Each structure stands twice: as structure tokens, then as C-alpha cells.
View 1 (tube, rainbow, N blue to C red):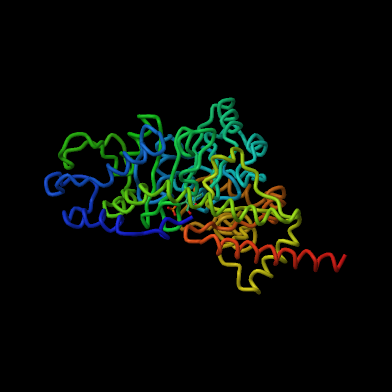
View 2: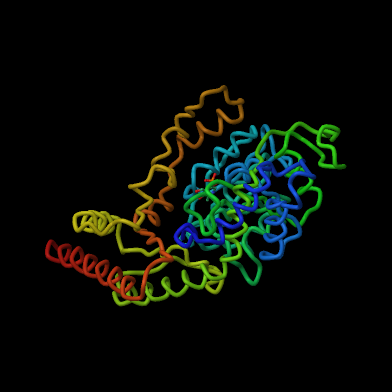
Length: 406
Ligand SMILES: Cc1ncc(COP(=O)(O)O)c(C=O)c1O
């Protein structure tokens, strides 16, 4: 998935444009920057590429979520429904603006199970935050219907799914707002960066101001700008935006390579009836950053992971359920224990106590059997074939061992 695999002279050229002016900040210094506005250019390129009205660049995907939540007016006492399989940034952002994360199950799409969302709604629910994990999408039609029915905000976390689409629209542009991350392992990267996407002018104006100390960005004297509300500093730098600009121009190429490698690997793994694949609400829209697949049981999956590690071929495969501390509820002890450096508000304390008491057995039943294989931009056809065949051989081995014990 990472765009860093195909770095080249294009990125260097854009960065050099900025270094030559010496103006590393995205705002102000109109004269000395000699017409170089990389952040503005990247925002326009995002709107053009993804067909949205507004894009606000910020310093990370986590910042994008935080800024989006604030711009959407979510705060103390409000509940935000998010999935148990995501990245820790989801609950970090919700907590940082004073709201309460409420966890819902995922289904075989590896994203929010709409039925679990319905069950999690309370009078305090303000927002549903699907996370389009591992390159593919949530069931957005059903989630939109739920949001309409209950008058809830839909905030799409598309940080891991840049370039994926749902029924002809790009992920991140379908809800009230959406977010991208350009961190170092994302489809397009600028080391650290993110964006808030929206088709709503007012939400964009709020995101714009909130990410820069509440500046209204009106006029051409930064010192005289007004502050209609309090904001913070979540700005991106011109150096980062410059790299992002070179990368977004390569996005179509990245997606084409991902799709080709993904399709080849999927064909190989389809050779075994015991392997099944992630459900994808709109298969044509998959950005193919990962191939996520299932074995019949958690026990077999654990055995396979052990086998892949023993053979030294596990790298690039992700068993989120047991091996990673960042993505799945099972390893979020710091969230369940409410381990923060500062005092939480009362609804947050109660919300985290509720999470600590909850079990997510239907998500466990999905995630315990799931392996995601990251799709590299650098693989040749022969390497993809070799990788797939080695995985298949390892799966056959654990299946035959299991049969021997039955
Ligand atoms: C789903 C998701 N949301 C948000 C983020 C946060 O992005 P960043 O690392 O740019 O802060 C990530 C990063 O991995 C992510 O995967």
C-alpha cells in the first residue's frame, strides 16, 4: 500500500521548489514565496481527483479526524459510534474533543456492522464514524440510511482507503465529512499529513480555521486576521504538501499496480476451498491495498500464523486479532483502563467503563480468522506468484496437521 515504494525525482522536484523560496509555511509570506503554494495546489488536486468541493490539509490523519469532529460540532457528552477494528487514532480523536467513543462490532466487511450500530444508538449519539479499513469500504448505503433515520452525522475515516470508491463516489466524499492520512505507510504519503474532505462550505471554513488557531484567513495580512472561534495548530507544512503533490499525481498508477497484484494473489489463494475472502460492498471500488482473507477457525489461523513465522514468510501479513496492539479492541488495554495523562470528563469516564465491561464476540469470530496481506507496489508477477504459493503450501500444511488429529 505505501506510495513511498515508488518515490522518485518527481517528489524531489516539488520539495526543491519550496526549498528554493525558503518559505516552508503554508500561510503568509506572499511576496517571498514567489507564487509557490504547494498546500493550496494539493488541496485543489484532492478536490479534482476525488470530486469533492473542499479539502483542508492538516498535519496528520489523526489531526484530520480531530479537526473534522470539531468542525462538525461534536463535543462533551456527545457519543460517536466507531468500530472495534480500526486504528487507535479513532478513539484518540473522539476523546480529544471531549466526546465519548462508543464501540460497535465489525462484520465480514471488516468495517462497521450496521446492526451493531443500530443497537449502539442512544439519545446522546451524535455521529457514526465508519472506518474504511485496509483499502475497502463499509456498507455506506445502510449506514447513511441509519444516519438519516436518527439524524446523525456521518464522518468517514478513509485514511486507509485513498482512491477506493463506493457506487461511483470516492470514499471520504460521501458522508458529511471524510478524512485521509498521508502518513508513511499510506497509499500516497508525504511522511506526515492528512486531509478533511467535505462538500459543505461551512464545515470546510470551520476545519480551515480550527486547524490554524481559529484564523479566518480573510485578507492578506496574517497579523490582522480575525479569530471567530478558538482553534489549535494542526497545520501541514509546505515541504510535506510538496511531497503529497508529487504522490497524488501517481495515484492512478499506484491503484492500477495494487489491483493487478491483488487480483493475481487472490486467484492463487482461491485455489483452496478452505480460504474465503472479505465481503466487499462494492467490489469495483476496492483500492486493493490489502487482500484480507479468512480460514475456517481461529485455531487454524493461529496455527497458520505460527507456521508462517517459523518459515520466515510472515512479513507483510497482518493478524490484527492477536499480533497487533494498534488496531483491534483486544489489545486496547489503555482504552479499557482509561489510562490518560489528564482528567476525562464524566460521560467519557462512564463510556470507557462501559467499554471495559463489554465483549465483542461477533467481531472476535471474524477477526480471529482473518489475515490481511499487504499488497506491495514493488512485486513482480513472479514474486507475487511465489508469495501466494508459499502461503498456500503453509495453509495446506496446517490443514493436514489438523486432519491428522481429528
Ligand atoms: C484508519 C486510520 N485512521 C486514522 C489514522 C491516523 O493517521 P495518521 O497516522 O496520519 O495520524 C490511521 C493511521 O494509520 C488509520 O489507519
